[in-house]
Length: 254
Image (tube, rainbow, N blue to C red):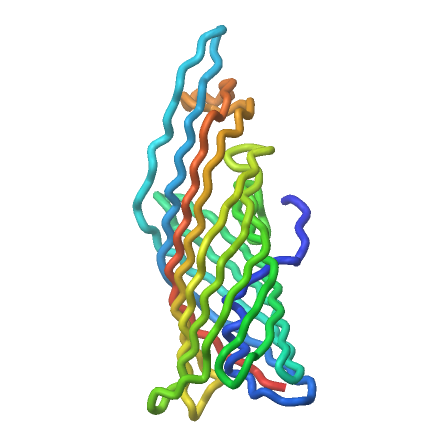
């Protein structure tokens, strides 16, 4: 497992702050939750197989299927006047074609309430994909994001909040070490809470990230399944990931 630093960002985590009562004194809240939904990974790699002085191009198939994903999440929020800060940690397990992959995100968000409803925020996020929590053997992703939210809309007996964020991320080490490229995306989130019990929250979130590159990296991959690595060059890579999640969170206020 590679070394990682919690400097990540999730503008969407700032949405939890809309349920914290604004006060002039410093206040804190913490939350835990469960998430379920779908995950799609549309990756495509054009490899040039370097064998006995000849070159043979191998195009990987693009999988457009959606797969079931579930996970846990948690976070802490600090509020002082109109300013807030949020630190979040999310883990997601994806069941894909008989195999499992794991996704971990660490997020740090700083924001400001413009009035009782509107907020703006920015932050940093680090994502890790691999064969376990905090593992980035498959690839890693990090970068800044900015966004805005609108919360505390009263709809009868419930309170609705929503936020949108744009991510300036970079994918790293995909499809092999040194394969870095811009991996930008958008995130949208809706948060619904009962007015009589705002500690209970149900969220719907959609995320999509996409990027491509012509890395020209030379490495070795077992293409024919014989257990021996074959020398290859990655001439073109494209990666698009989409997430749709429904989650339940319970918040504690201090």
